[in-house]
Length: 460
Image (cartoon, rainbow, N blue to C red; front, side, top):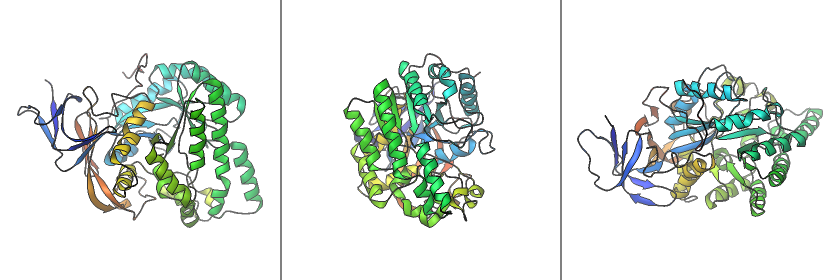
């Protein structure tokens, strides 16, 4: 028997419009939009009166570090914090143990997520010089993209660092029109900077910024744009930190390169001064830049120059951060961020820095299109999944770690006052979180293959 759910009385927000409208779903799929839709007494009603209903938020850059990287066995922790924060779908990264380097590991990870995820999920495949012949089979199995590091990853999945390997990787991916997402930092410059810093005996907090300076990032972006232009590959530069990085990508697009930029909430809220004050508790790679860059990045995200925003969620154990208290290089870089991403972006709309329609585009429609999930995801339209992030845009509150569900137990935004709060997270017609707490069990999420995939991985 079919299950009907009606989202009633809300203000629907998409990239195209804001409209007072009800939404009816059957068995997890939207079947009608309108006012006073006919329903029967068996229909479940979600009361959205006075609330904004956005297409389910997609986090296109999530490091669960599971299984194995942080001695956890599944998706539970980071997807629980994601659903609590209003995220309905994540695009997960391949840095797990073992790394996702072939279709068998890809299918194994999809099965793990089906058993233990609180949210729907897509998957990256990993790239290293020795697995280029494995990429197309992962693409056919539904991989959303392939993650490439142009520097040492700190994990067994070595980076694609030299020019030969980078050209070979993009040539391979271009041949089946795949998508390559890049962590863009130049390894040779990182090594040279660190040698100078070590020779000076520096372990101070500011040394982290000098190690991974803007030149390190910009050189890598410039090189990726060159090889993307030569090969015709589609490329996406994740966690872009600076206006000049965005400008490089924009100039490449003007030449016909199929390139896009992603940024993250920490580049819109934090600066290099936070690293100088707080040390390893604010480190990530690449690091935040100055205040002028922060302000400009907000404007670029608002204007459309940046395609998507992802959390770059990294649930670093506090013990690993404390190691950097006397030597910033001993701390583990990374910031837990998926639980706070959506309200931080709501806050920008309430501050007048970004329209709510642009927010819906950045966080839902655009990532769904980029990663091949549209129109199943990223839309409030007949035939799309009934995924909604329902928010009280007027609610004022203060971010505090003690109120968050993520097991990391800390947040770089402690004490930040925001306006805009997620009230409900709805995935395929089910209320999966309410008022910051999951309401479903792990395993309610499902693997979402890229649209047009020839076959799904064997999940049986």
